[in-house]
Image (cartoon, rainbow, N blue to C red):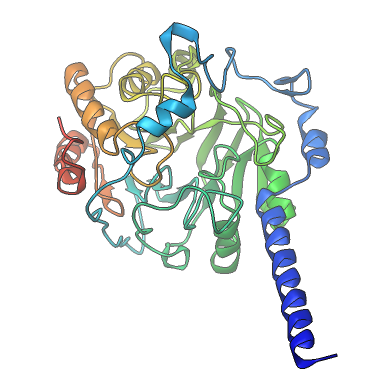
Length: 387
């Protein structure tokens, strides 16, 4: 064999090996097999006709002809570029006290948040990876850096996950959490199968159905209903999606996860509310998928619903915006819209820069919120992306 032929064969073998590694990495990021997910799902009363069901019918994409809508692909082409800032997003490197008490929250971008409730710390939907995709090469990429590394996080009492979409459950981040923290995980049914596939020991995982509860060092966590869907591969709705209520001896927090509008918010408020703090998604909405994400006006209404119609004493932290481009609206539109809606309804709102820790003292939570209301996004939004 000539040197040229040998070099060609070696290059071909190297390329094939690299391709095999990429395929294995992709399969690992996808998570558990469909068979193992179904084995977990079938015991749930919310699993019917071969899949989990939302409280109301949930359609992924509205019919292109319905209500005068154009085709989603055409709308996406026309909206290209809207979902990105044109300047650098101001990110704050977070710091936390050695011990914690009372109520505080650090928004780390998208839905990822560190909530402190009565001396306990809970990390919600941790996503520190560069892309929300099974691939490290394609898929929605971060619009700003993560404010810190997983290893920089303080000691965690539990990691709480809402569902298995890539922008809420990130396999590389789980690996980093295992190396640095070995935390307890509280998840909806089926998400535990993904964690087990990635090497998390079963004794550190608690999986719950809607309205199931568990207690973590004096804080009661309740799995709450949501109107959404799930899936990481080609098969959908084999794992449950959820929000979470966290109630300690003195304070209560509600994290909506991902959801479209649902009557369940009123039920949650009646049974589990009111709350001192809510974390509600405001981004990635569209008239093409009205059932699966809240728009900012609907997010304010959800906040009011879970607080039994009175949002004046509860603080709303909007999440699920600014970090990834997942829809067709302008990048800062969710923040601008939610500010207007919150003001109209008398809702106390906090819109911190990613990485900012916001302490909410019992007697001055509303005042603390107003100190984080400046429109920091204006300096990095496109000229057309302003009120």
